[in-house]
Amino acid sequence: MIICKAKDYTDMSRKAANIISAQVIMKPNCVLGLATGSSPMGTYKQLIDWFKKGDLDFSKVSSVNLDEYRGLAPEHEQSYRYFMNTNFFDHINIDKSRTHVPDGLASDVEKFCRDYDKLIEEVGGVDLQLLGLGRNGHIGFNEPSDVFARDTHCVDLTPSTIEANKRFFESEEDVPRQALTMGIRNIMMAKKILVVVSGEDKAEALKEAIYGPITPQLPCSVLQLHPDVVIIADEAALSKM
Ligand code: F6R
Image 1 (cartoon, helix red, strand yellow):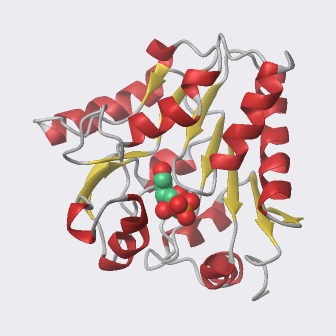
Image 2: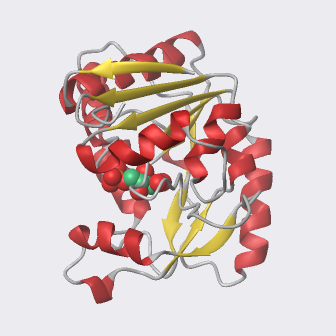
């Protein structure tokens, strides 16, 4: 595990974008595993900048996203598909038919989840998985639990995640109570994992993820077992180390 200290959010985003750029340059038809939320937004912005300058070509890249709120249509402004389109895909030359986000409106959830697992395999597996960290240590929407969930599944969001994510909605009642998420096996199968962590509210989870026991009560602790993880964290996120 490599831990890379960034001065602040901008520095973290630039460093993460550098690693993703290297991946896209070295393997133009790579599969990127992507995340939403505040943590990767600066990374996407930086990648868009470099794309516009002519330094990057996403035309052969495929992507699979970690998660989606259950019950939100792709056009819903808080859906993760909408987030990905507006914060990244609409600004680069990726072929949208090769971008995949779980379907929040899937009626047969179990079948959808098995199909999403298959899809990840069919695209060739994830070359580089980008992750943010929940304050409670979740990755994707794998919430603290008694067991590590293996594959794509539907999850009940914890009160702490609903609280953390209500900032994106008009009120807490509007935050969906469930989400579809890749499981821990899906995440751990990625060839390389890149974690971006910013802010003091993530400091405790980050410290435990690196130095604490590996436990499903802190899902990100499982990353200790992955052979190729880079964590880029700003000073605030590293303040408890
Ligand atoms: C989002 C995701 C979540 C977020 C995490 C941190 O696709 O998978 O695990 O990465 O909740 O969210 P932010 O970055 O908003 O603090």
